[in-house]
Length: 290
Image (tube, rainbow, N blue to C red):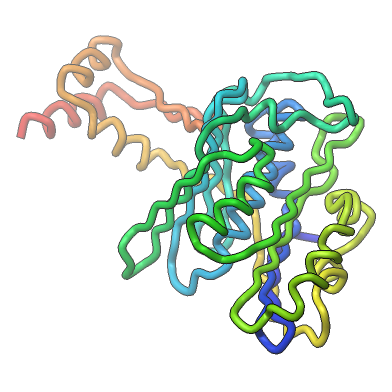
């Protein structure tokens, strides 16, 4: 089944929640980034975080979420656009780290801490918004929880999970966010207790649970459901965008590239290489003179 996000409300509308399965998306990101298991887990969690953060958009949008700690993975970025199109990248996706003492992937160590979680929201007709919060652990789920509380001032419970199989590929990925709205005071302790019991989220997904199953486990009834929203991996790079990047370079750099009879622009998200001909460079040089 394809990836998707679903939204719901409960307790008379005083609780809202989002859940998503991002297995195929995380698997595609791992493939194009040639990511190690620990890097794939971090990229999958961050891509899932982006999917959940984008649940409220009503018109055309772009949302970027970035974690920049002091770990060997380097700066890691995930992006989602209108239509549920997701991509992600890391500076050093090939890094390998030993498992933690509990046998889990060392995502927090790979990301590093201290550091910053940054979210940039762009929506049609609205001024861009940027929020920043310090990293709590580098595990991304805890950091997203802190972001919701500190930057958006919404009490939230967050769980993100990526299961990497023995063959080192992503077997399952997904996440859930539950938020308390005004009037929910009488249910928050009950929901928190259920949330604490929501162990092994990615394992549940790998065994067949759906995002709706995760929400049913956590939320008190009755639950009001919204339509599923498809999520998929897709990079937005193109030859046209690469040419635009070249045309924005200073004249001195363009002339240097022209001496080499061409150039190549490589997308950091999907590693696609776009050759730029000498004719394009010559035209860009002429444009920069005006």
